[in-house]
Length: 128
Image (cartoon, rainbow, N blue to C red; front, top):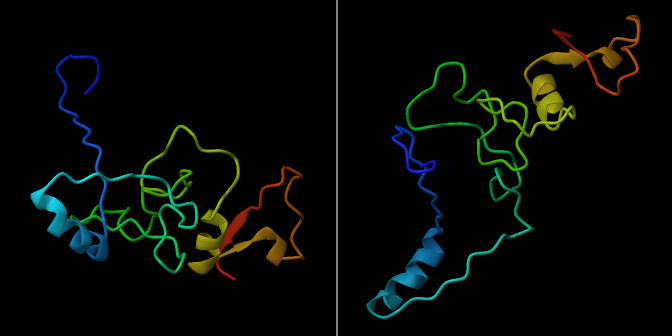
């Protein structure tokens, strides 16, 4: 909430547990419950149980963002999240694959065209 001033923005950190873990905790709630929260490095943040990247799908539709961007829980932040993040790099992360999946093609897929400048980035063009 900042440093004590008035603000309309409130951040409430949350965690969640799956149904199996919740069912294991419920019987213990009559007494003290101790838990350890840690990062599971075998599970990628922002992915489902199969390792697929989650799409941004809030309960209320956000025009231009819902289902067309990556979920905001992905870490590190991805270029195609619904908002720009300060920690983005010049790496196109998963974005190049997403754009190809929805119909864009890379300049390298069109050999008759001049190659892209030597920046290490791939340039996209709509259509095949």
